[in-house]
Image 1 (tube, helix red, strand yellow):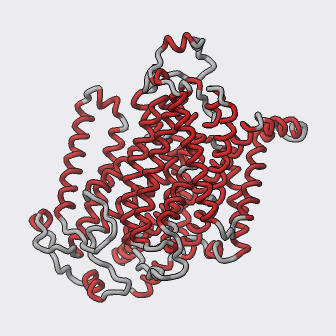
Image 2 (cartoon, one colour):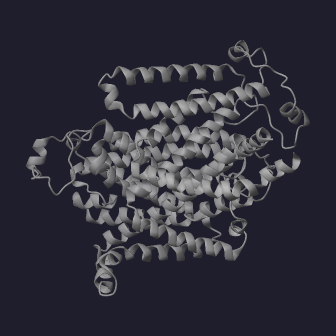
Image 3 (cartoon, rainbow, N blue to C red):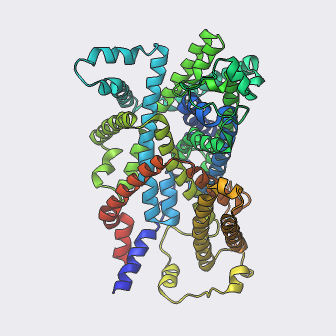
Length: 595
């Protein structure tokens, strides 16, 4: 009895739902072209981060080598984008990492992914709140904060007066969001704002070519003394100068922070059911938008560090202020206008993904049923918007900009890693149909038709199509690889010890690499699915594994505080899942009834 109960419990944790039929190709709601999806992806990706994060990363993490940080973060995002491109071609349904994880590796990981994405999206909204504060404070010479402090200091403590501006801006965000919930021209506005942003950032790149000085990439201690910075007690550490003033470690930390600027392409696969020819337009939209963003970020970061010495770029400063340094005051307002356009585009879609994700999870029974009305009921929608519109400014008060950015990035990196794992597993699985297959049920409940042998593991035979046995082999091997890659990243995070030549650590790395290579070879020998797809990830299984490795290694660069906040939010989610979700899951209840 105990064994059967544990077996049923384990089956619930890894149970995968059957997919509904996608929207028909000729359905009138499919109105988004590839250009619309590219505009949506670029518009949401080239957003607040490029204007706000530059000062944070350049000043005390990477210096001029921020361009390398963007390249590393961009490479990781492109690899993840390739994985998303295949899985959206294979699963042409609107969703998110939550849906793709659910149909591939089961309910528990899907809940963890969805729950952390909810918190990450709220943190993203809090970042927009802080960005609004910075934008208006800089444009008005910090008069907002000063006026608030002077006017309410007699009535509330100084700390609340200092941060009341976040609540004011949060209220503005909330009101504007309520006004745009049913905006019929959303995509037209998105394309116009995206065009404006790209033109403004193109102006920044051209300005860097005109006013840039390559000497700013080769600064030495003499330059600091000449500039009167020999006493740096009031400044952040200046590093060692040159192109990489904070060393290799600074590039790694900077890349983990810069990853935030590539996150927005998830809006594309949330619109799969509205896309014309989704198997073609969605993969193309993801890949094209990511390459455009990578080129823009590389150009803007190069222009910024060429125009302004990195030691003069302080945390909390925004991109437009670089033009005050070179004496182009009118250009300051031009770039600030682009900054406000970026905030507006972030504002237009800041609440929608949160509501959609909560609605899907509640509809699946993993969250409380009242939340399922968040998309259909007007009252529930307004209440949800009010709640999240207040939660975001509260988070902005208690956490700094980098804290929120890292928290958002950590949740996304986990989701991207799981999607890469899903692609690896799905490519080697036999075709699943949308109706129950008696043969599959008999195979699961009856004796196995195939026997696993060492010869069959390395030489699976002449079959060119996956079998249930080969699919299970890949499932287990992929899970082991994810664990081994995580251990490898933990060890490589201690790279100074490895460089010292410690034989114990080097031996551990060699053993892990041998195991990873061997298990990868086993997966490579298994037959792949021949299902026709418009886009498939090349060089399987290497590309998904490289994506997982890069994502996990960037996760290892996060601070202990970020991991602590992530752990607390995950524990809260697991408590909800095991106390409510696992009992009321629609798929789990259906499985129990069928049993």
